[in-house]
Structure formats: structure tokens, C-alpha cells
Image (cartoon, rainbow, N blue to C red; front, side, top):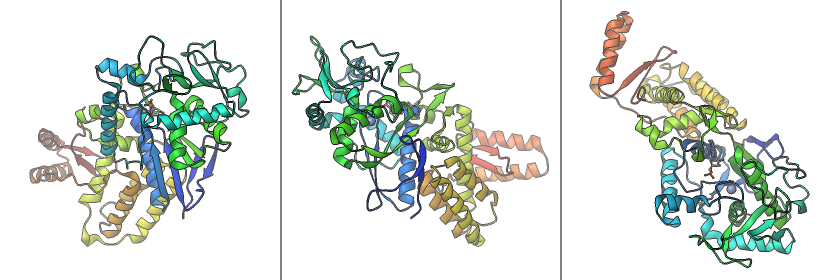
Length: 467
Ligand code: AMP
Ligand code: ZN
């Protein structure tokens, strides 16, 4: 079985994934807070999770993946102050908290499916695991890791010598985040809420009895409770966006390791941000792009998947419509290659594709290097029209197991479009560019677009030029 090397944030180094037993790789992926639609920044992270899962499956590993749904406890400050995002969303939309969460969870799953994301084995909700979360706090209390303030039960980070090891934080003199109001009752700035009390005088929609008082769990607690419930401790891989390193994952590690006296997970993988105009796309910024917005402009969801795969998961990805269009063209070009030029009379190329497949696989086992893998595909199709038989089809099927781009999906142009394309090709050969431009416009008017590629071929598809 091929070994897959990844970058482990915990050790700041490349490591090979070695499962504890049975080649079973257990993955916990931090999921969405369901108070609004997912934006394409969030979705980049889930495309990454899917890439990881598909790569492991491709190389013969078994995978058990759990992805939580955060429907309580995530506060607007991302720390212990502010409103509960789901309660605030419910007020905004005049729905109950559970209606709101249910709605956005469904929309999220729809988005994942349109992006060809293989569904995790389990998607547990925080509100369905209150009992487990309370148990975890009880364990921490018994081990003397907690203290009570007027607004909740807190984790005492000074009691854990290696607190902050993931983010390489230094506890002493650690500043609380700028957006976070100082809480004078906290013993250390890095201490965090395990359980928060419902504010006096105000009734929350979501609140539960606990040994400490009526309230709700701190955000990090759900991930510690649900990951170990379904995956054991330690499990292999924990994933999240890079924004989770310093607080959310740091605190998950602290409470789980304090409670069980052993590591939470072996490999910590973090995907970088999707930016817009140089800034992190964020719901709190108010303007964000959804998958639907992309579709409204004539793109298909998989164009966005292609855009994501074109960048390494550990680099920032600057979103623009031009970049999406380029991804669209790249995808249309590949599909055209793997469908229009599949021709049983052109058998052969077994060795050629074996070589390319090996290079493709090596790119993926090298920290999931998709830009390199896609470059191999471009190389492979540079030999276009030479081979068109089974070897080529098998190659496309294999690489698509990981890429999930529907490479063999045929965008069948109707006969009249094919006729126009042929005429245009002839006009270009005669260097009659006036005629070839006229034919391009005619093709456009019929809802199709044709783009000439630097390689000398063309991409024919829908939505190539729409904005
Ligand atoms: P949240 O709903 O805030 O819990 O975020 C869900 C996931 O999306 C988390 O793993 C975040 O790290 C990730 N995320 C949020 N914003 C972005 C962004 N602009 N680019 C990439 N990932 C993001
Ligand atoms: Zn989490």
C-alpha cells in the first residue's frame, strides 16, 4: 500500500500517515456552524476534506470520517463572549433555533453533494450530544482542571503544562484576542469556557440543565466529545481551517488530553483560506459568495471544485471570476479530451498512461499536491488525438476517483453546433478570421461558447464566458 505523506501542524513536519490498525484511517473534520449558508471559503475546506478522503480510499485505506454540525455554542467572538451565532440567526430570520439550524444544514449538504463531496460516515449535531459534553466537563472537574465564575465553568489552562503546543503559544503574557472583551474573572487569558450559564433575565432558546447551572456548552467541547465518542482516542486525522489552530483546536486538544491523559489525534491537517480581494472571505464581513451565486453566473459547481484543486490546500487561494473562468475552461478542455476523443480505433498508449498515472499518484502522495497532479493531466492530454481507446478511458476514470470532476461527463453539443464548429475550423485554416469570428458569435447566440486554447485545440462548452 502506498504511503501518503502529509504536513502535520502538530509537529510542523511532513509525516507519512500510519494508521493504528487495519489500515483504517479515522478522520474528524470540523464542520459548519449552521446559522447561515456556507460560503465558498467554507466550501474550499470541505473540498479539501473530500480530497483527503478520496486519496486515502484510492490507495486502498479504509476511512471512517465524522464531521460535526455546530448548532449551538459558537459565539460571535469565536471565543467566550458575544451572542450564540445560531440564536442570533434565529432572531434575524424569525425562526426557531432548531428550524434555522435544520434549514442551513440541509442547504450545506446540498452544496456538498453538488461539489461531488463524498458524504462523511457520520454528521453528528452538537445539540444531540449535550449529555456527552456534560460528562466530559465532569471528568475535567474531577481532575481539577476547572473553575467556576459568575458566567460559566472554565478550563484552567495553567494546569496543563503543554497547553498551546499546536499553535506554539506561550501561555505566560498571552494576550486575549483583540476582539474579545477581557473577562476579569478568568484566571489566565487563555482559559476558555466549557459550560456557559444562560444570562440571567434572558431566556435562551437552547439551554440545558447541568450540575453547574442551566446553560449551554462551550464551542470546543462538542468536537472533543463527539470525536472520541465515534472514533476513539487517539484517532488518526483531525482537520480544520488554519483559523482553528490557535483557539478551537488548541482548546479541543487541551480538554481531551487533560481528560483522557493521551493524545486526541495523531495528525493535524489545516487548509488555508479562500480570499476575495486579498481578504479572507467571512460571513461576518457580510458580503460573501455562495455556490448558488456561482451557478447564477452560468458556472457549474464543479468549476469551483476545479478552482480549489488548482491550488495546493496549504496555500491561499484568491478568488476572482476570471480565475473561476480559467478553471471552467480547464475542466471543459479535459472533459472534451476524455469524451470527444475516446475512439475505439485508437487503441494503445497503455505504457504512456501508466507512466502518467504513476506521476499523478506521486503528486498526491506528496502532501496532496493537486496542482502538480493537474499538471500531469495537462501533459497527458497534450498527446491528444494520438490515443483514444481503453487505456485513455481507464486513465480518466482512475484520476477522477480522486479529483471528482466528472471528467467523463459529456457535454454533448447538438448537431447544429458541431456543424458551426467545423465551419469555423475550416475558416481558421483558411485564415479567414472575419468569418471565424462571425461563426463564434453565432455559436454564442445558441448558448455555447468556444475558446481557443494555447495548446492549439479548443474548449467547447456552456457558461465559459458568462459572468
Ligand atoms: P465555521 O462555520 O465558521 O465553523 O467554519 C467552517 C469551516 O470553514 C472552518 O473549518 C473554517 O476554518 C473554514 N473557513 C472559514 N472561512 C474560510 C475561508 N475564507 N477560506 C477557507 N476556509 C474557511
Ligand atoms: Zn471542531
